[in-house]
Image (cartoon, rainbow over all chains, first blue to last red; front, side, top):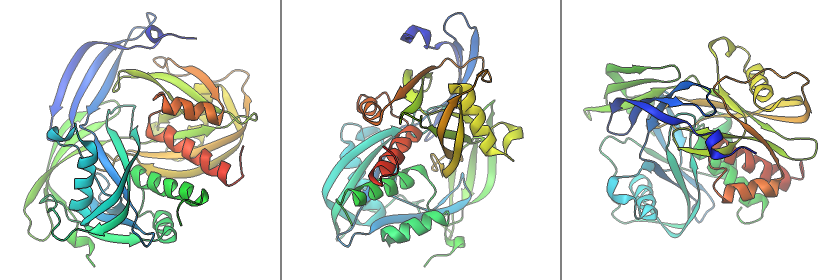
Length: 191
Length: 191
């Protein structure tokens, strides 16, 4: 059985490449363990995010349609957003804010499910998942970001699975949301 | 109902920031639809990857323990790797190569499950999932990359869920693998 020292890659030099509004990019030269020499590691640092699986009283999932520049296409996603600097001490509230801003809903039942690192090979982005049920419309919802152009959809499980087959649902957090929903259906916890 | 033109963000200027061994980084100035003005988009381009959920004849999942520099820690993951330039026309073979290099196993049954974009807000990385069953050890497996330090584990479903609770399993692809496994168990397809 190996110990931490058999794995650990110590940074011997860091080249700061980019300090953006969302991400920071660096390239580290690391010393490999057990005298294996050095290697380069390309790293993206991200503030992390929150995401919400919103299920209406009618048993539909609330999705937002939006353009994603990295893919150059419009896709359907569960509501999500990156964490602002002043939100780290109340992430549930950050998730509630995203839900309200993007969908106009608030949830009477709000529960943390899990948190996952999205792409550990090069990036430290951590995404926290919440499930929001017993939804109701907010009278005057907080406005969304100025440069966010969204369209709302409410889909049954079968409609959402069809959207996934058609490639409209194709990102990890929304595919995970449908997998959670499938597990809850198989467990008899949700229709 | 909005049309594509109501969403599309056209690049009016691209600033190339970094051209690395794995990722490329750019910052685009985009024209927002409907005369909303311009915005900046920070973009990471990634070659994409393949990943394999390997299940042994004893009903255990094969995981690799490795150090992940972006997290500065050792975690347990399903085997995965980025796609090499000459592999795009046979991605199943790329997945079989990763499985053999990282675990020393080959699979007599190999099936594509899905593909997902890991983090669509800033990155185009697409990860293809395969499930490999009816595994057997290769006599002289292909060697792994020189700078990959791995340790192999074979865990039952309960052991893997425990590793997830302890935070040793914490990345999206491996959490998705355990969700698939849970669905197959609930459907009675796997123990």
